[in-house]
Length: 238
Image (cartoon, rainbow, N blue to C red):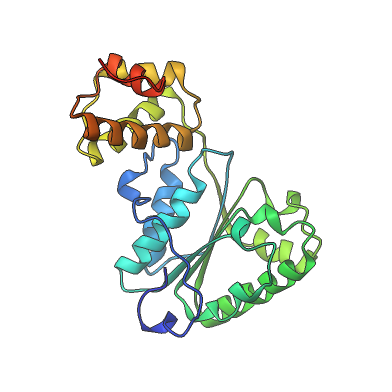
């Protein structure tokens, strides 16, 4: 999503998930990263480099940063490289006119010299224009397989913060919050059931919440453990 006048001339429209906001992010263990995102619209804002394993919330924080910048009157884009890396580098053109550029899955630049060079020039243009850059990757810059030394150096200059993956207590808090935002109530036994019998990946668990939300609405049923079991087994509820 590109908001406000400064980005209006750009042809491409990069949208982020508005539901991925800071209020929906459980900060436990990652308080420094959340504080850094909160500070992106302040006087001492600086570009950020997030690392961490899958499920640690990297993509969520990138999109939350876009939403926060937009709400403050700035302009922002969210670029998931996986959706663009097999095409031309045109999506990076002109982004220096924005307040914040966020780029996800930076490790996908490996082996793509054209994208590495284009991203290097965007980095320089954005810095010269006074804009902010926020990126996320699985590891540190030197370990991404980027062949352009000057780009690695630029990335090394950014404030780097490592996110920790959620434990079960944090997963429970995330699931409970996701249910509450949908106006759903699930007994603690229901959440425990999901954590015991479903994959621990948060994207999967949140997808299960969406599925249960739809089934509950259609059946007019509360989220009891028997109802949850019937939905997940693909069986009609009693």
